[in-house]
Length: 354
Image (cartoon, rainbow, N blue to C red; front, side):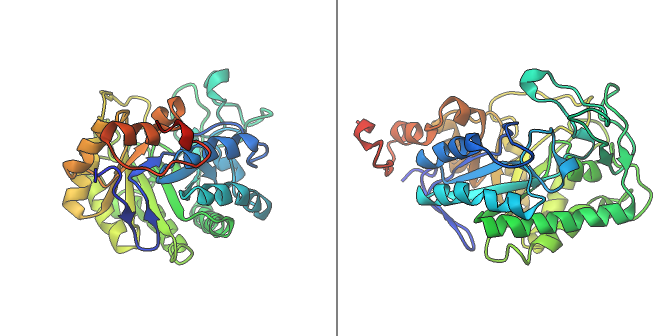
């Protein structure tokens, strides 16, 4: 059996293969509620036999949305609206996951196809953003409000409530979004976090917000799989880096986090990234082999053999794919054919197996 199509047994769930759909924002929600677009978008990957399907960044508070059109799970009514999605994903033998998020200073943005740009707080589709420190992401952005200690602790409670709703809605994987320059990553990065209280300064203080969220969520996800997505490096001098990511992962492993989803970048506007196929895989490799944590590799992984090689060389345990799934929603079928792996097709599609 190929490594890519080898099951992965976690503590409470088992993925039928190692190809996982990475969270991808669709900017198509209605007041934070999912629409038919989300059911079809996520459902097609489950019908295509992805091992797991992780829903896009889903905000724990209204002001935590990247854009006005992002998904949210800050109300019980929103939580109930996801049941149809999780039911369908499970019916196809896939595992439903959700990424809980807060965009912090990178919130209140426009939809990509309408032109990126942060809306002013008074705009119809904008609001006052928040951050660990009152520093905007770029010169053209609005200054975020610096969170008080009390507001920071309230956000921990909002993540906890969101996790409770996610579990009730049927999600089997709960991933905390601590990457890409969004709020939790903003606390982690010394380039963004200039606080002088218990949430800033030292490494131990900068990881405190994330650890408090993990500790609040872990009891709720005791029978689920708790993942954390991190940016392994800021790609900027004196920023968050691989060494700190390894140290953080070692701590998260003791807190019950089961998988580290390893991405990079997004914290600062002046980052310098050399983008090429598999450019983030070395980070997953280093974290996996220095901590023993189960890791997921992401970043321009677009070919079946490329993914297989990553697993064969023990650089990661899972392959998370985004753009390739947008190009080819049934990429798993294609990968199985290319690698000569046996795969049970959805019976409705089996006559095309050829």
